[in-house]
Length: 293
Image (cartoon, rainbow, N blue to C red):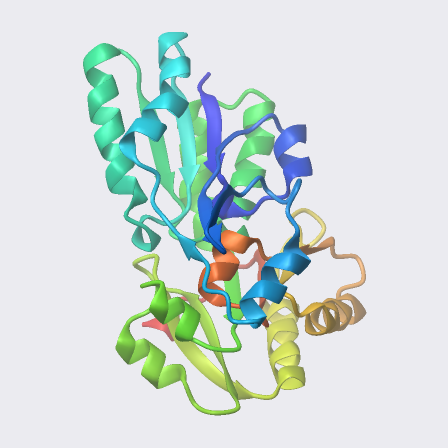
């Protein structure tokens, strides 16, 4: 059985990572000239990060270079172990080109070893949800083939809606086109995004007002969430606890037996979505990608 890997861009909380014995690649961000590798919230000062961004600091993220990838992967290959990596969407970063280079170099030294990479075509907990429930199977002894079969189906059921205060952070970081940024940037209106078929982001709706955003996000979950006692519903916020809690309460009123997890958006993802973001991730009949076409 392969060693199970994910990355910190999936934002699965560190307690789940430790409970499920998942290895993970820490993705970097730089704030005020200091580079930090996100550890799934274990030591993160979320308040400080968002206070600095609101004060005008411009954090950045960067790709991991091939040498670092080799340092992470080689001990497992050297030990005769293969790796099954459930990754955040390839469309979001050039870091996967560096990973490809590292694997090509390692293949020369370890021709019998392999790293299976599953592209979740998502990021944050839309990716993390896939990691979590695949890991539950892996912990019970699922083979690589069984994990792939599960993920190839499960990925089509993970729905996510993201409400951002401004699209400038996504545009500045290259996660949204200029056309998409202009289309979604109307004064006083909160853009709603979801993941499209290619694994990128598309603006699918524009809503006026924070409370209206909360109602929209909650209603999407209430109407479309399935298996709510089996799969958790995630409500995230990037320094907007008030509206995140509002979404939580609205869902809980209508789905009292649902397992709902409240969690902050981490600094790597927060660099690109910006403070004031609220999002929901949940299991649905299928991904609502039709709106994003």
